[in-house]
Length: 231
Image (tube, helix red, strand yellow):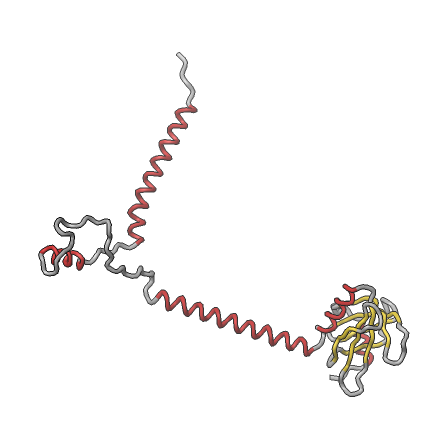
């Protein structure tokens, strides 16, 4: 797409949002004196005017294929360097450290190449986040299994040292009657009660007790507030 001078002037004075604007001192490579100009940054186009409010810019700098570098000529000064063959260098100067840093950051982030790098980086971060989310979801499905409710893993046979030992030498002899009874009792499967049934059984009792306690408390308060009948 070709952009002529008329289109650039129309875009410079249009209501397009401005990324940054303000006064800067500028000089080129030939002259050594700085001239004060009003700069307006729109996308990757840096317009400069004689004064604020002018309709037509004095010039425009297309911020592609360039770098923003510090200089040691003046305080708070930097330059826009084009590294292509025949490229120019623009020297700019501000009035404070904060303004210089803000301008350098805005100009460095204005090029189309920088935007492409940012989009590629954001796309990579998005793909990594989606991959991590998918891995976490797969891990949750594998952990829960196909059942609707998770089940507690079975406990192994454990010996309680505080249980009362049988009379005698305290040790069951393999093959004896007591040993057979112990083995038989250990082999009896323990009945598993779901947590839902336990909660329902004890929960109803707790709710009934709570309702009864509230009724008694209400009756006691009503009895206290009732006026005494004078004879």
